[in-house]
Structures are given as structure tokens and as C-alpha cells.
Length: 86
Image (cartoon, one colour):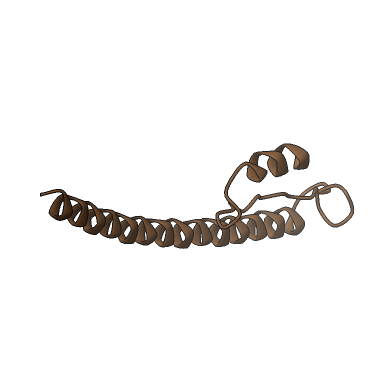
């Protein structure tokens, strides 16, 4: 699974990576018969998922801001071309 995530992420530009969530089966290789350990694992997974989603939101906001800037530059250059071609 890790190689699949890495190869999928390797196709993205270097400045835009998506966090991969990889979980272990617990500290001893198994979650055990239940109870506190399962609750702890679920809580940790939820915290990791929340953090990863927050990072993705921040990356998306940054990319959207860059897109706005590039659109403004493109519009400015198109206006220059139109003015020079008249």
C-alpha cells in the first residue's frame, strides 16, 4: 500500500503533496481484545485525520490564492498584448 501511495504522490508537482495516512495495528501488532487500547487507537486516528484534513485545507487555500494571482497576471498580459496589437 505504501508503494501505491508514494507512486500516486510522485506524479504530483513537488510543491503540492497530499498527506498519506498510514496506520499500524497497535503498539504490539494487534489491537487486543478491546477496551481502552481500542479507544486510544480510534482517538489517535481521529486526531491524525483531523490534522491531515487541516493541512490539505491550508494547501488548497494556498493553491487557490496562487491561481488568483496567476489569473491576474494573465489578464494583465492579455491587456498588454491587446493594447500593443491595436
